Amino acid sequence: MLKSRELETKAALVAGWSFKREFNKANVMELLRNSPAIAQNLDAFVSNRMNFLKKK
Image (tube, rainbow, N blue to C red; front, side, top):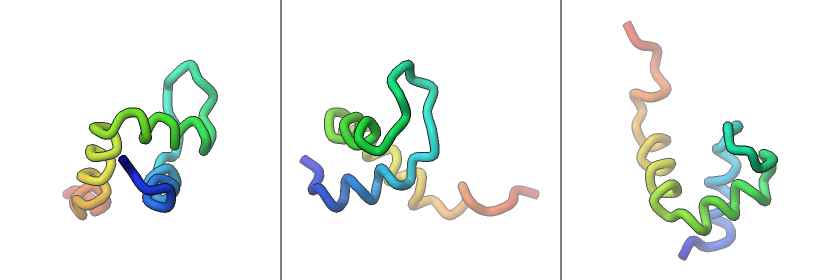
């Protein structure tokens, strides 16, 4: 289970989504709390520096 502060930090990294449910901090936190695999994928993405460097 994710700790509250860790959950808030992860939720702050999400810029938007295409789900029918309204995009807001509470809904993002609920999604991450209930779907640990998504939270883990989010961690992996933001930990990979290549996702943020300009590609040649």
